Length: 220
Image 1 (cartoon, rainbow, N blue to C red):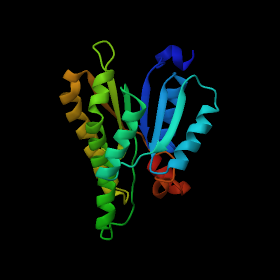
Image 2: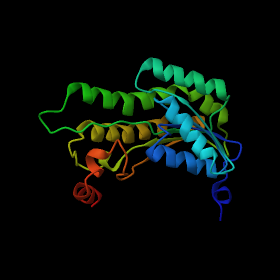
Image 3: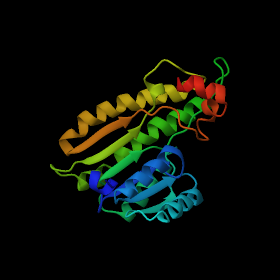
Image 4: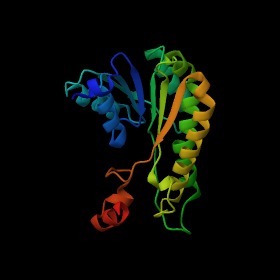
């Protein structure tokens, strides 16, 4: 059975932040396979455009568009929200996937690294969702709510810092914020859910997945 028969998304637009690599790119491809028009945004415009071109070449019924979008600052969030509004008048699906991490031993963890991780993983996620509320509401109805999907992590549920203290704390915050937004946005016909993936091999998780022994321990 094809993805379109399982959960067809033809005619819907989805925004995937951090969609050029890792889980975001996997999600973008899945959404395209189901027929969605997928907007891929991350800090590196060229990477987003290249990812969109590669995904469009796969022949799925959906299409991808890649452009720059930085959720690490107030100006960046505002610019990304404007770009999305220029491309669509409604947004049925928002996937808050953009994230960053930092690893350092306890006692040596930099103040600036803590701030940056929280700024991207928590503040950026919240502010972008807030900025796109009108587009989400425009896409929502009783039979087919708009969807917000936040990418959390198993590290937000278990007491394992593994030197990524700010990352683990930020993902716990994402999970709790998801619960709050789900409660507050239900009456607007917007659902809010979080995923809590385990470790995927990527540049961001290199501290936990690059070494085979460490990867086995983290996976266990």
